[in-house]
Image: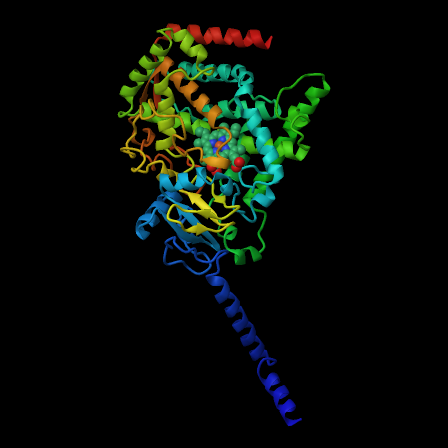
Length: 533
Ligand code: HEM
C-alpha cells in the first residue's frame, strides 16, 4: 500500500507534473530524432567505399542541388576522387545511393545487368502529383504499355510522317535567320526558334496539333509549365523529397502543383481541339488517334503524350544550339569548312540533294560524328536519370548491391572517362567517324530505360546541322557576355536541375550563297504549300 502510494506520488511529482511532462516529451523527441538522424533506407553496403562526413538527416545532400556552386555530376566526380574509387556510396537524405563514375562499371551494370536496373527511385511529393509519368516512375505494367506506345510513335516506320513537318519548319527557321542576319552583320540568338521546331513536332505526333508562331502565347505558357515541372524532376534541390521528417510539415501549394495545373489545362485544350477535328470528319494521325491500337486508357494516352512533350523541347534544341556554339567558336570554325566538304562529297557535289535529304537519311559520317561528340562532350543530362534495382546486382569487384537501392550514373564523368575515350576532355568532331556500332556515349542514358527518342533526336540534330552548314558561315559573337561558351561543364549555368541548359550566345550567320539559299527555300515553301493544298 505504502509502495503504491509512493509510486503514485513519484509519478505525480515527475512525469505527470507539468515540468516532468515537458521533459519526458523532450527526451522522447530527442530519442526519435537521434534514431532518425543517421537512418538510411539501406544499411551500409559491404565492398563499396562510403563517403564520410554525412550530416544528420540530410546526409550529403547539403553539398548537392547547386548548393556548392557546381552541378551534381561535378561534385560526384570530386567525391569519387576523395574516396579513391569510381564507385562509392553516399546518403541523399535517408536514401542510400551508389554513384558510378566510370565507363567500365556503368557498362557492367547498365548494359550487362540492364533489366535489374529498370526502376526509378521514388521522389515522394513529386511524381505522385503528376499522374502518369514515364520518366519518373517505376516500370509497372502501365508504364511499360505507355513506353511502348511512345517508342512506336517515335520509331523509324513512322518517320516518313514527320518529314513534312520538320522540313518546312527548318526552312522557316533558316529563312528567318537569313532575313534577320543582315548578311552576317547582325548577331542572332537562335535558341527559342530551335526549341519551337522540336516542340512543334512533338505537339503534332502527340495531339496532332501545330503552332505557327514562335511567340505564340499558348505555346510559351505550355513550355513554361513543362519547364517548371522538369526543374524539379530527379533534382536534389528540394530537401523534403529526401528527408522523411520534413515531409511531416504541411506544404503550401508547390510550384510543381501550380505548373501541373497549367500543364493539364493546356493538355485539355489540345485534346478538345483534337476531338472537334475528329467530330468534323478529319483524320488526325497522332498518338491520341492510336488510343485503340495501343490499348491505352485515356489517362494513359495523356500520360504518354505529356511525358514525350515534357522531355522533348529543350534537349534536342540544346544539342543543335551547342553544336553550333562549338562550330562558330574560334576552335570550331575550321571544322565548318571540313563539314561542308564532307556533305558535298557524300552527295557528289549536289547541294540541292544534300539539303533535300537532310532529314531523310544520315549519309555524312562527319556530321553524325559531330552530333555524337557534341552530346558526349556537353552532357545535357549530367547524371542521366537515377535508377533503382529490381534485383540484387553485382559490381565488377564482386560487391553485391541489394534490390531496391538507388543507382546514379555520373554521365558527365562516364562520357569523359580517359580509360574509354582518348583525350576525353578535348572536343574532337571526327572522334566517331570510324567508330564501331554500339553505345557511343551515355548522353541518352543506357540500357533498359535509355531515352526512347535516341534515333529521332540524332536524326533531327544531324539534319539541322547539315542545313545550317550548307546555308551559312557561322561566327560567334566576340562580345564577352554573348560569346559562345564551349567548356565541357561550364557551357551550362544550370547546376540544380536534371538537365543542363547552354548559356545563351549570339552568332553571325553569313549566307554562303544568297541566290542559292533564296532558291532552295522558295522551292521548299512551294512543296509545303502544294502538299498542304
Ligand atoms: C538530345 C536529346 C535528348 C537527350 C540528350 C535525352 C536524354 C535522356 C536521358 C539521359 C534519359 C534517361 C535515360 C536512362 O535512364 O538511361 C532520357 C529519358 C527519356 N527521354 Fe530523352 N533525351 C533527348 C531527347 C528526347 C526527346 C526528343 C523525347 C521525346 C520526344 C525524349 C523522351 C524521353 C522519355 C519519355 C524518357 C524516359 C524513358 C523511361 O524512363 O523509360 N527524350 N532522355
